[in-house]
Structures are given as structure tokens and as C-alpha cells.
Image (cartoon, rainbow, N blue to C red; front, side, top):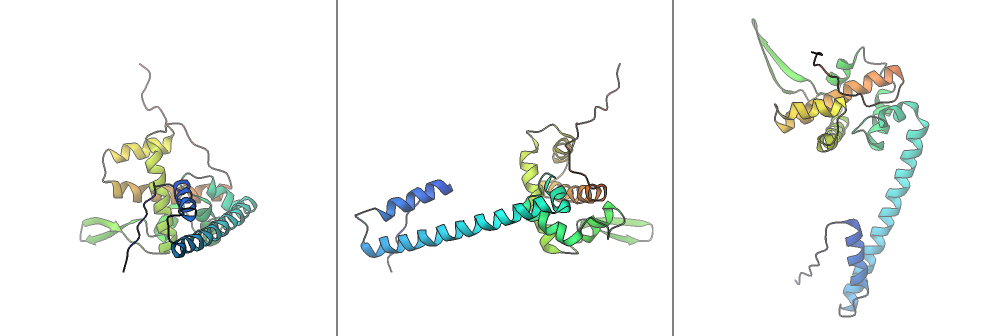
Amino acid sequence: MVDFRYVFPVSIKAFEQGVIALESDSELRPLLRTMVSDIYTEYKTLVKRIKAIEAMLAAHVERDTNAKILHSIPGVGMLNASAYAASIGNGQAFKNAKELGVWLGLTPKQYASGDKSKMSGITKRGNSYLRKQLIHGARAIIARSHHKTDALSQWINQLREKKHFNCVVVATAHRLARLMWVLLTKQTLYSPQPMQNTQKDA
């Protein structure tokens, strides 16, 4: 079996340019050029379908008040916004923000024996898909937090100085979940809050 390997730079544009170049490469055997052409046609079909689905999601999020509120939160993209809006509505099923975090399985397990209590990893209860998506969203905003000065970003930056990265990710996801509940119950869009200055005037 002969292995034909072509390496393109990492980017969608570079991939497309590379495939187009292969299609028109006269030194490539006709059979391989046909295969490349078929692959590229399939790729373009998938891209078209993805764009159509994204357009449908964007229209849905714009129409749905709850999804629109969720989409305004950092780290909550259209997919997360639509999925959470479909699952929790306006948050009416939860008495408070903490209950939503517990439902998602983002709160630590607690073991008690006598007068001693020990906390361990998160429970991972509830909907694993929703929890996983929020974790991904948390990773995204953590990656950008060091460039920002709003209260949420600064909270993340301070936490990163003290905790392991994975702990920061889960804590951020938990905070996003609580923020979801607060904004849904108030029916208001997210607005970045400035970092409070705790220093007293001399």
C-alpha cells in the first residue's frame, strides 16, 4: 500500500488553497486528482451545511429571549445558549443560583464523618452534555481573561494565581452557571462589571 501524504499549514484558508492546488497539479496522477476533487466537493458541502445550521441557530437565539440573555454571557456561544434555554427555560425550576450548579454537577462532593467534613472533586451529576459545553466555554474565557479588566476576568486571573488550571476551569463554569440563573430570573442581558476598588482613600 502506497501512502500519499500532503501537509498544509494550519488554517482553513491554507487547507482550501492546498486542495485547490492539488486539483490542478498536472504531475498528480488522474485518479488521485479525481479523489482530491471528490473530497473537496464533500468538504464544501459540509461547510455549506454548517453555515446553514449556524444561521438557523443565530435566528433562533435572536428570537428566544432566554437564549438571547444566555448568549450575552462570556463563554456562552449560540450552541450553549440554545441548549441551556431549551433545558432550563428562565431558571424557574431552581430556587437559587446554587441549585443550578448542583443540578449541573459542578459542585464539590462532600464527605462527613462525625464533626469532620471533607470536600473532593465535582459530583458530575445531571446533564453531562450541558456541563461539558459550559466547561468548554469556561476554558475559552480563561484563555482571554488576562487581556481584560472587568470584574469576572480579574476574578479568574486572581484564582489562577492560587489554584490548579483545572480547578479554575470548573470554578469558572460554576460561576457562569450561577450568572445564568441570576440573569434569567432578572430577564436582563449580561453587562461587564468594573473591578471594585477595595482600597480605602488615605
